[in-house]
Amino acid sequence: MHDTSLTTAVDDSLSTWLLTAGWEFEAVAELVEAFSRELVREGIPVIRLRLTLRTLHPQLVGITYTWESGKDGVDRFEAPHSILATDDYRNSPYAAIFEGAGGDAAPAGRAGCRPGISGA
Image (cartoon, rainbow, N blue to C red):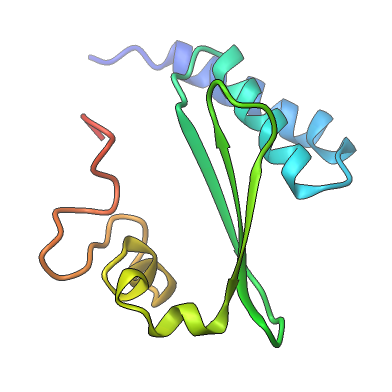
């Protein structure tokens, strides 16, 4: 039987962090960086965390924030609507996810959208 006590403790700690310290950030990039560092502090081996927010902006389909271990700050990418017509987008896991297939979906010919996670 799997011992879930550590998982529950980490879940509780992260939930508490999000509901307390998480509300203190004024910018999304600051929240992403701080939460990423909190995950690492909790012993979760995060190498990269990416948050993509879809928008209702006339020029942007979404904004992506990426934190990488060993780097300061967070990279921000503003995706124009024109990106939706590119092969890079259509062949990416984002296309399937944004079209409602869920987090484990994969475009045709791909094994899954999370190839870097083993044992998931």
